[in-house]
Image 1 (cartoon, helix red, strand yellow):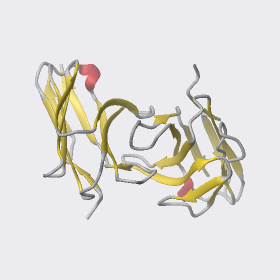
Image 2 (cartoon, each protein chain N blue to C red):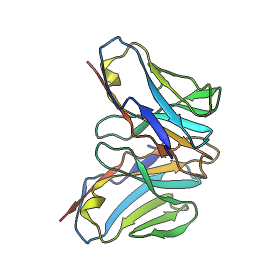
Image 3 (spheres, rainbow over the protein chains, first blue to last red):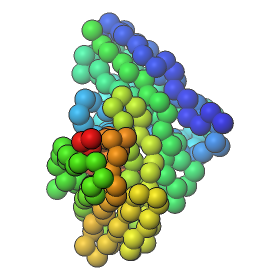
Length: 113
Length: 111
């Protein structure tokens, strides 16, 4: 029972490079979320999805893009990486928001140099 | 006003004592409330959920909810060094797909 799987676990990017953070869940959850967490800070919502083909912006969407072609996968794309995007990124999923909690992946630690 | 506010830390308690964490929220019609524990360098993990007024106990953890006062708390009894972590309060407003998280309270249990 894998739950929420994020890859890679660590990555170093150069300024201006692009990359995709992968997130997959095997719990058949419709709702998926991307957060970033800066050192000593709380979680900030980047994007979320309520089902395949449906995505919406969260609190801090600038510089990121998402897609949701299947129920299982919810990749996060960084275009033109900037030092301000250095952070830990968490993907989460839930079955029925409000009724049940979100389950988190192990995170991707990203450094932009 | 922030949607979810937690008591500022860090909170240091001796081993065996009770750690008390507080959380207030601004959306009066919030329905669901969660406490997550996050060890340094790890992802948040759910430790308690509470949906109705009153107390809910699970082992050494007790969550207390008072919707009239817009207040939810977490008590950790017989604190152990393994309880040293950051505790995140999360609130789900009515008819919303998203959780609002507090900034977290860091707890250190002194042996």
